[in-house]
Image 1 (spheres, rainbow, N blue to C red):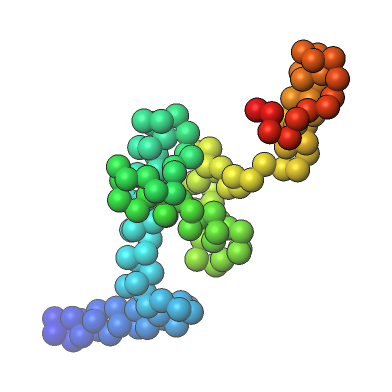
Image 2 (image 1 turned 180 degrees about the vertical axis):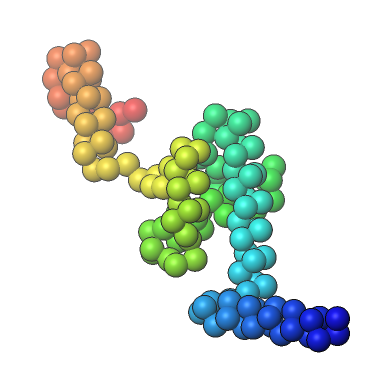
Length: 134
């Protein structure tokens, strides 16, 4: 029994050492903790979506501590193709309709402004929009 117990402990130690060697910047424990934190924030995001109908959490969202900052950091991690954001995590975010880029494309902005100009022309009969016109 004691010999079996020692063997079991040795196996556990080897597994932890092997897992630690696979992690570049975090220990196995830190990686596990990071996964739990990520999962908790993801669940908060899902709750936000259930309450608001989208995943567009404002950066300074106050109802859930740190959620806005977390959402912003997820976008940055994906942009940097950071190894800390896994394919599984990206797939989960995609599955709830997470918006990765908040910037509108130049084409979208151009089309919106062009449509505005067309409306202005229809109303006023010309395209000489004053600079301060709203």
